Length: 228
Image (cartoon, rainbow, N blue to C red; front, side):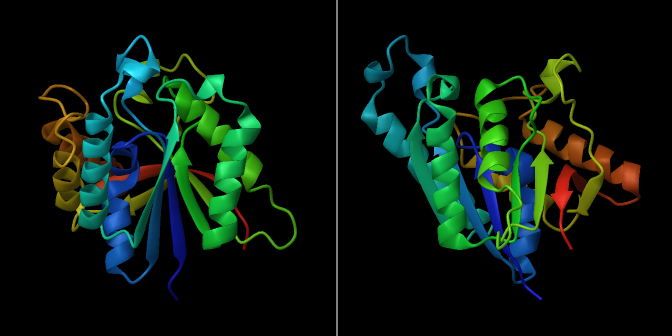
């Protein structure tokens, strides 16, 4: 039986880094995969958000669409929360964005950020997702999984709680290259080895998690809750 999956990410490329290969597998298996990116992903590079070149923002949105297409997403939703400044936005406003997505799409499964990441936007969004999907009677969301983001989850060095502790693993040996190719769409975000977001490092991480659970490659998740 197919499911409706919603990936809620803070920035363009987080959706690929966190669960791109899993999204590709889920889509290939006949599930409906939707991606929502809440932050515009570029203005933190400027002292004043208004200094950002609109053409760069438009180009980043185009790359996000191409990445979504590569992993088989049915639809991409993009919003304009301030990059690396989610903590400057009332939490309720972030919650309402997620609530509207849940009401519109009625997903049974959500993938989103870990609550202990280095990046503040990830932390705010994690809390917003949990708030927006409180297990009230009639909620469509049955399972929530947190993913890791290379160069954010790992660069806390275990100093921020909750530390990412995966307990669910998805075999992505057949779709790992879809993740790598989707990340290649983000030419402004990808980095050369040994950066954690390099193609070599992404493959190495997947192979490492795969070795933990006896497969050639895997993506790791932390189950936040599951109602069956």
